[in-house]
Image 1 (cartoon, rainbow, N blue to C red):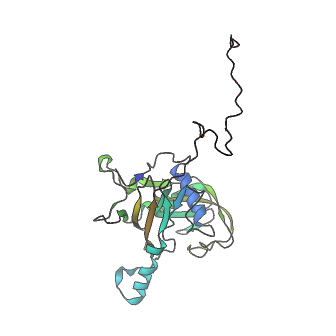
Image 2: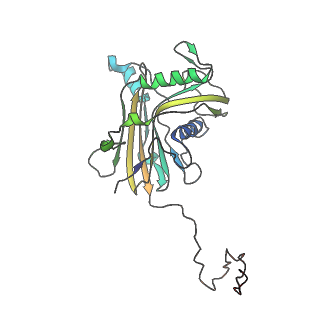
Image 3: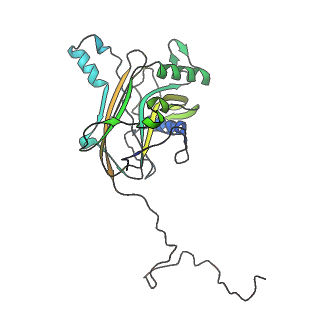
Length: 268
């Protein structure tokens, strides 16, 4: 049995498409507590990845300043900072992303409409460099590709997603303020996001490590690692269709509203 399932990027998952889930993720990212992964009890654990990416070109040497820059490009949430979920929660992995708001400027052009946002987001993503995402279960030998489907010749590129134009709220106290290349103030904006996103669900019980990275346009680099502890527990409703134990103290039949049936030919 596989340790987890990869949700097909063309499917509707729990009522939302991938693009709609990206919009939910982005609003969560801009919230006051983006690292609180639990939303709606047993729903989705949003990994935020490294939004404080580094654009320093550290390929031209390895002096102390460049080493510091390399560390800043790295986000780690492992060991004591691991994420804990139950088996009926899904995990949202943002491998590499490009986010734009109406009014942003990209390569000297002000983005004033959806088409401009979409073109910029697509260029900023597909013109990037290498991308990678791997996973390892505790005590396994090696990390394996997060997307494993050689029979269908599928890789991370099949998980390229573009959202529709959607509203995003930046609250006061958003921890995202100051991490973008341009100034962003609290308020409501129209946004568009493109990138590589993977949703995972149906995890088997255990401890996992997920790592992902990507190179964007120019010197953009982002790297992230997460530990994920999955507990063997699922949210279940109490199905009493078979009735409770007769005489149980305090028991009330939930179907006691059903009228008495007397079959004396009245149905004729």
